[in-house]
Amino acid sequence: MDKLRDYLKCYDPRFLAWTIVGVAVLFVATFAAFAFERGAPGRYACAAVQAGSLGALIVSGVMRTRHLDELQRRIQLESIALAFAIGSAVVAGWGFFEHAGAPRVDWGLWVWPFFAITWVGALLATRRRYR
Image 1 (cartoon, rainbow, N blue to C red):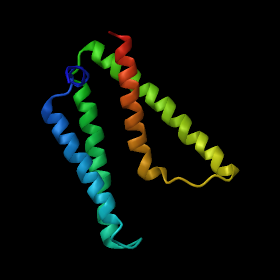
Image 2 (cartoon, one colour; image 1 turned 135 degrees about the horizontal axis):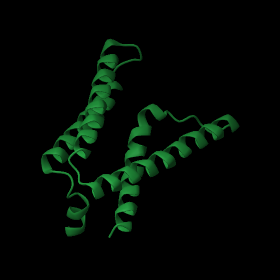
Image 3 (cartoon, rainbow, N blue to C red; image 1 turned 90 degrees about the vertical axis):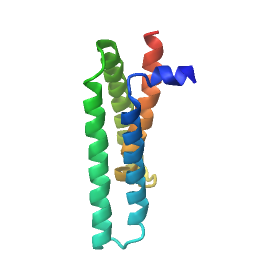
Image 4 (cartoon, helix red, strand yellow; image 1 turned 120 degrees about the vertical axis):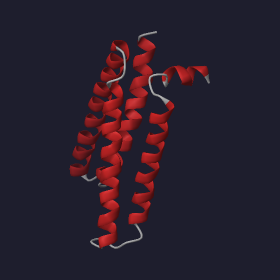
């Protein structure tokens, strides 16, 4: 538990709680959209909630990094850069496979969770380097 607390020490509990709420709203809106047909006003309302909650999550994450010290900022920057490089390579690489005949992936729904998971992995690896 101390190791997990060490990884999350740059984030206060209020920020983490709001992040969990934001992700929950995003998922609820995503699954609620399936109850409506494509083009229905309810589906557009769910899309607006999804876009708003995702935007709020991104902005709050950026705002939170402004409160970090220099080392934590460097770790975050390297982690984000690594996640961006890996994520972009996977998305672009899968595009090549789609042209070859692989099934199409709806990246609109999955690209941000994929990038977030990649960022967490890169964060764990980058933090080990600075121990």
